[in-house]
Length: 261
Image (cartoon, rainbow, N blue to C red):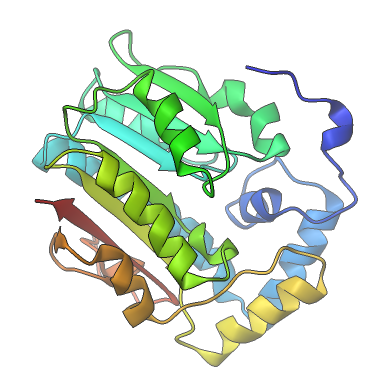
């Protein structure tokens, strides 16, 4: 792993991964991140719930794929900072031999990458590819060093495609990765949706606070990323309604799991 100069991390500028880390109750954030996070939460208090429910969705989706679909290989694109239970911890708890490739291009995430590289089992593999999701071929090249592309792979985009303003580009990125994996592979995706006025206000406040713009899409737009895939029940729904352990209110974030036939 290439070294990252400390200057690459600017604590004075709000940072997407650190803001999200703050909302999730993590400690890898600075005053600028907390100020931006509080500014968004002032107009959209549910953002904290969304952040934490997004990780619960990840845990349920990865558990489902490992337990019920027999998936043993995962590519987590745009992984962000480690908080709560991470993909490798969930997968390797179910199946110790699971192999996980984390992908991110962020210098802050890279600084923390060693925290992600610790296997929870002797049989498993956990590694990190420094790449932007706009370069899916670089992601695939790195993943192929660790994964067997003759066996199913779960490709995960967990709340990150909103940073790409063009839906066609986002769909092309997803499509390139899904085209490269074999039958029996799965797409796991969730993103924020414009399903309420307060979440739209929150997105605007994020930009005003110096954060990176995040595009909220309609559920119908997100569904286009799953075209050609077989949806696992219950399909594309608010992430709090995707195989929940207990009843929960819907939130402005939709997700699904789809299988490549």
